[in-house]
Amino acid sequence: MQRRIVVEIEHVKRVRRSARTNYTHCSGCAADADFISLDVASDLFEVSNSEMLSVLRKSDCHFQADEKEKGLICLNSLIRSMKAERKVLRGRGDYDC
Image (cartoon, rainbow, N blue to C red):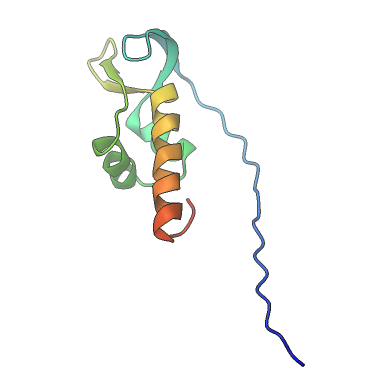
């Protein structure tokens, strides 16, 4: 008798990156938080700026402007959004990001 089995292996890869942040009060979180630019966020999550913008458009990330009037993203809300996006992709059977 022969049987067919399926083995699923999940690999966990630990990646350590650092980036400079602006630490200030986030009104959306009602707490102090780290803020990063779009370029830094794209680098940290290893996605293109357009992919990051796509996530930001459909998320509830918190934003604020810095001294140079550049948009900054609340890192706490961005991480929550990226985790939620990963769950949506898993639920559809798409790849895990």
